[in-house]
Every structure is written in structure tokens, then in C-alpha cells.
Length: 281
Image (cartoon, rainbow, N blue to C red):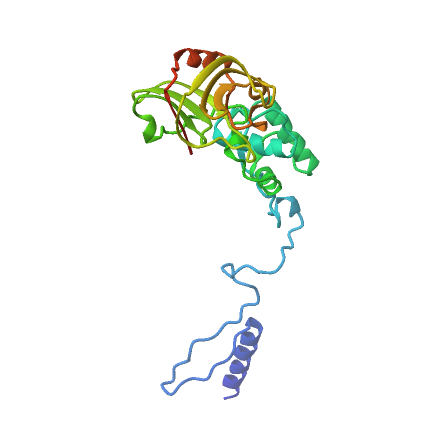
């Protein structure tokens, strides 16, 4: 019995050194599985979620907390053309950055005007009109009227009024500021025209050419009215050197001014007394 107790004591001592826990036997005399306490972390343990302690970590490789915002989108730049560019130029003209009239072509003067506008307001001076510059320009200006987009003419002629579709007609559109010379519904020629101011408006309606005067001079304003074709009292279609020089930045005293002397000279030679004149919006 002593030998058994001594042997048992020796076994218990070895188990304690090995880290095992003694377990009692169950009712069937079998020993339950022995639990082993590992003194080191297993190889498949999950990594720590704490801060890295790697001595050679490079902070420059870490992602930036605040990425640089992308540059604003460029809408128009050198070489672009169209009605949108014409509006940009008209707005630049309103704030006195572009002196020349809109042409619809994003040329060197337009790029220089945009660059100056940007620099004055602390924006990147690229000369290209981006979304930020365009929003700033829009806030400082009003939407250009049609005459501001075409201050020196060049606007496409409006659709002819139905009253212009028969006979020989001087078909004058106040909307597009153009004159069509039409015969039996066909357009022979077109030209830019301007009208009277709000105080001396050009009358609208259907008229006829009452008389023609090649070298006419106004008895009221003492101003030349070459190639005059009168259609309503003192109102006439005639050439205007002022219109040729100033464009739509001026106005007539009620007449229909033509700026192209060559075109109105040809028109004067074709129009007859009694031909119809239609002035409409």
C-alpha cells in the first residue's frame, strides 16, 4: 500500500510540472479528457488589433486623411466655338474684361480676358473657363439679350412671316434683327438691320414702299439717309454709317437701318415703288 501511495505521489508531481490538471474518474471508471493549458499563443491565433509596433513602419505609405480635391472641369478653352462661347464673351463684355464684340470663337483675346477675370478674384489664372470661373461670372452678370450676343450682326434670320410668302416683299424681323428680300416666297438676300429706340420705335405691320431717294438727307435730324426706301411716313429702310460703326450699341430714330452698304445698294436697285414691307416680331 505504501508503494502504491508513493507511486501515486510521484505521478502527481510529474503532472504538476507538465501543467496538467488531475481529473477524477467517472462512474464507469474512465478518465475524462485532460485539459492542457498552453503557455504560448497558438500559431493560428488572430492578430492583435492594437497599434503596430513594427520598428520599420513608414508613415509616408499610409493613406492621406484628406485627399486633394479634383480640379474643376474645363468647359471652354482656346479653339472652341459656338453660341455658348458667344454668351461667355457677352458676359465678359458686361464686366469690361472683353472690349471686342462676341464672335463665338474662343480666341486669344477671350483667353486673356478669362485669365484676367480669374486673377482678379483669386482663382487659378489658366485662361480656360472652368466650372468655378463660369459660376462666378454668371453671378456677376445678367443673361445676355439677343442683341448683346450679336451686337454687330450675324444673327441667323428668323422664319419669314406668313404675310411675306407672296409677291415682292421686304420682310423685316424685329426678333432676329434681319431683313429678307423675298420674291414669291423665295429669299433673294438677307441683311442685318436695327430699329428705333423705345422713344422712337419702328412701327410694325404691313406697308408698301411709297417712294425711293438715293441721296436722301433727313430734314428733321439733318443726317444722311442714303438708299432710302420710305414705307410709313418718315420711316424708311436705308443705309446707316453709324450702324456700320457702332452696331446695336446705337439705335435709329424709327427707320430700319442697314449696315452693309453693298447689300442695300443692290437691294435699292431691285425694289420698286409699291413693293410690300412687312415689319413683325
